[in-house]
Figure 1 (spheres, rainbow, N blue to C red):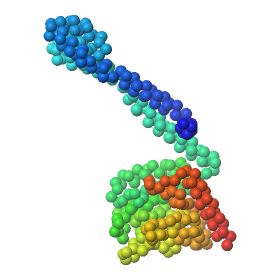
Figure 2: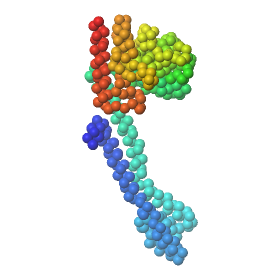
Figure 3: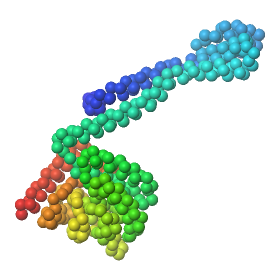
Figure 4: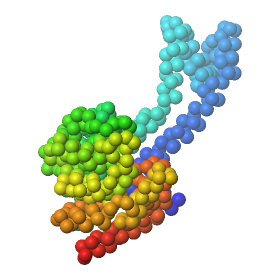
Length: 373
């Protein structure tokens, strides 16, 4: 309960109208459930009584007896019968019109639920927008900037057959948000290749050229990550992408080559070499993404390590980068407590937080050692 109250407080003042909407909705649902009980709608005895009076030629008595019946069916039948007796309308028309008026009783207060269903999402959206604005302002006041945006544009969850509108929409959302945050770099990819692919389709280059130009036209720099995408199939594929997409730069992930196959070589494809890949994209690299791991043949997967303790050549790559004047962004993705983009990967928040902090501090120590040597 305390955690629920904490979430309520974190939601801000707009949680109050949302709570009010919830309470009104519950009240209407309870009222409708009580009013629309079967016994209040249809009473078989009432129907039989009206029928018996009509057969005895006592229709007026049936009308008088059930005009204020607690049963909706009784009221509808009696009032329809009354209209038939007092007007020139036929019996079918009279009952239909009485039934339509009776339906209004069933719909009482439903307009309230309909109104709440329309305005509650808008209140929630307004809260989200206000929260984002306040968050941006808090970051600015604290002097904290967002160096790069790790977008999902053209990533390994999409193929070249994914509707292009999906990518365009992602770009349209990313640009104003990056500009508001003062974020210069956006991570993009080059679509997931087919399992047997060893060449990059020309359409991939066309799409990446359009993506790149749209960001560059807004003063933003797209950087491509060597991951499970066409540009990540080998360093040769990466260089080809850079050559055919003017203005594109690179974000180098130190561990991805360890578990990615080198599709520039004959099958069966061997794993890539992080150092070899780095050397060939170094001059195009605008961001280094630190991850380290050790490949384990027995389980056909990798065990993740602290920076510099795996096969990612982290120390060598950072040493080489600094020696060649690298002075831009470095980020971390431990993958040790949890793989954040794996829906099946779970860990408690304390473990994730503590591991992330320790990982960052170990990287700081490693960088300090490199720069001191």
